[in-house]
Picture 1 (cartoon, one colour):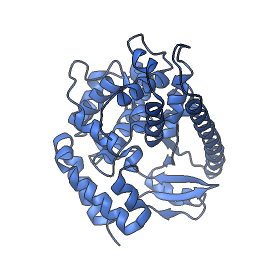
Picture 2 (cartoon, helix red, strand yellow):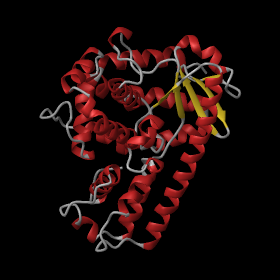
Picture 3 (spheres, rainbow, N blue to C red):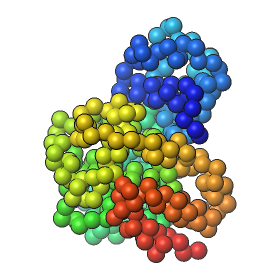
Picture 4 (tube, rainbow, N blue to C red):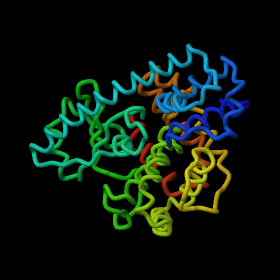
Length: 340
């Protein structure tokens, strides 16, 4: 999708509103006052592709009466929001049940990514959730696997299972990053949460693709945790892990498009067009790019070839912003993920 017309501007305005439970400013309202039905339909389509329909619905509940939205659009978003709520409640129930099984064996996995940051949203149940990601040290994994139904290894090295219809991924690595463990913060700390979310976005941005939902997670986590964080210490952490340039780009995007304040790179904003193109190109994890959709339908071999081709296509972007992760990730992909 090209960034043209009022669509992207309206979408981002609504997204910021839903993300922070903040009514639109007087400057943001005029484009919505004359928005036609076709553009509203495109806003809903984009919200679904980016897995943020719940946030867009929340935003329209904050709009003043002067903004007229077609009734069908409101009903569609309301239905999406209710489906997201039901899904989140079911996943929370499954997670609670699974955690009780772990605790019975003396295990206490850390919940990663989505469920970790959902509590930072104005309405956590409107955050579109995906898989449930859990972390345990490697020596605890064999015992934890006994709690899972039909566990099997996934291509990224995690253990995957499906519990009552919910995808569970058990990881022995908290960070999607290749560096010495001695420079990494303790899992579960505020610093670790920010690095974990940032590294996860990087992993997908240089590979099959990433959507704006994952960037929303980082934005709300940063806003919630920044009173506990020292910006200079965070910049040093990014420098030690080889992700300084990447995070400068990432936080510039969050400032420019998602209204993030108090960035650790305040005053150092850079151009973010390359990242915006990746996000708009494929939506949530790149699944909405036409070639990616065809590959996912075609089967495992085609999907893996498509993943490799997307890594290679993004090499110039990846090397510019995180060369170490680029080479490490591509090597891992070629070595372990391209077996047919």
